[in-house]
Amino acid sequence: MKIGIDRRSLLLAGVMTAGCSSLPRRGGSRSDQRAFVRREGSRLMLGDQPYRFVGANMWYAAYLGADAPFGDRARLGRELDALAAMGVRNLRIMASAEEGPLRNSIKPGFRNATGVFNQTLLSGLDYALVEMGRRGIRAVLCLTNFWEWSGGMMTYLSYVDGGRFIDMNDPAHPWPAFANANASFYGSVRANTLYRDWIKALVTRTNKITGVGYHDDPTIMAWQLANEPRPAGDVAHADLPVFYRWVRETARFIKSLDANHLVSTGSEGLKGALEQPEIVLAEHAPSEIDYLTAHIWPNNWTWVDQNDLPGTSARGEALTADYVTKHIDLATRLGKPLIIEEFGYPRDRGSNDPAASTEYKDSFYGQIYSSALKSMREGGPIVGTNFWAWNGEARAQHPDYRFKEGDHQYMGDPPHEPQGWYGVFQGDSTIRTIVDHARAVAKLP
Image (tube, rainbow, N blue to C red; front, side):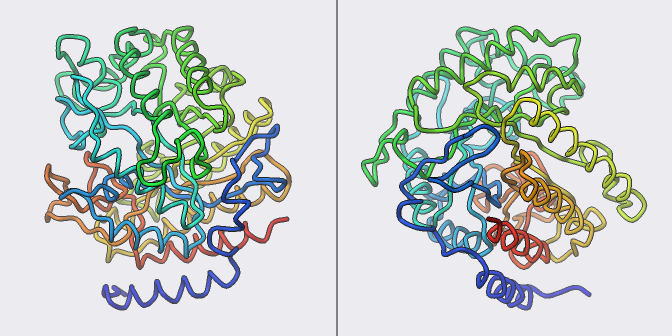
């Protein structure tokens, strides 16, 4: 039965009321709020207790936090309240966006080709961090992107290569041309000089609202080298020594500026490592990399067909289970924590409409959460999850569900994707699954 928006909102309120009674007090203790998350072997710790979390992706938090026509601070507060009520204690957000020529990249960006930094957007990040801290929500901050929707590595290359670039999904440059061209970023001294300028500016930034340096802000859990960095699009074009050196030296550079926070790669795991376990191990081996990450996209990877979920979901479930098991093994071999920091699934019948049901999506979330909880209970390496992604109260602005420049109804589905494809809306039954998992994690000793 299709549920109207008003009734869906009432259902959401009921879910939150049911879940919050068993969740820890919002924000935790004051001592917890002042403590930094740190790594001890294969665990993350907060004070003298293991740090385990239920999290989400909300790439657009700084955009909502901006005091500008493209921002919406009131909405940001409502979204953070909703997430906190669900038991979400960790958000992975973009702390970068490179403004340039690529199709479908978000505008405005945090920086442009001339090295001018967008102070309005940076102030939006300041504001978002303050509001997250007030609610006891920690942040993972991504420092660039392998993909085009926030500019990313290809835009950096265009800055230093005479404006030349390749658009993702350009018929003239079919896959894996974009990814292979992107791989030259890792060895480009000029592109990485600009990238490091941004890292230094951000890591050493002082929050204009609190007067606290980012490097001294415990609201930040970790810096992330990039969203989904891959060594290339295929093995033949992967210069692995250069890629490994980029990971190690960039992480070391961040640690030289900030000794308080964790550093992670942002890798998809095996999919981003060209299906080679040895690449995952080598990429995450440096001591400066504190934990492993894994992303799981059954529909994107053709494990399921969104137009035939009844007929393909079982296959997707089996491949997902195998993927999680392999990453638990890799993390165990390295003796480091593992975070499943992206996992996404379409709505029933592949719909982008928030009124569409989410039976198969809820089942997929339940599978991920069951695996994570089992690992946590058994002392395994999984310490947290971040679902992709929070759409909240946003709604697509156009009948074709496409994002157009000038739209400000940001949602978890980035500008290059159908708006509503993978995100969780207020009122979705998926929220019940998230709340139940958060309650179970909160009960762990």
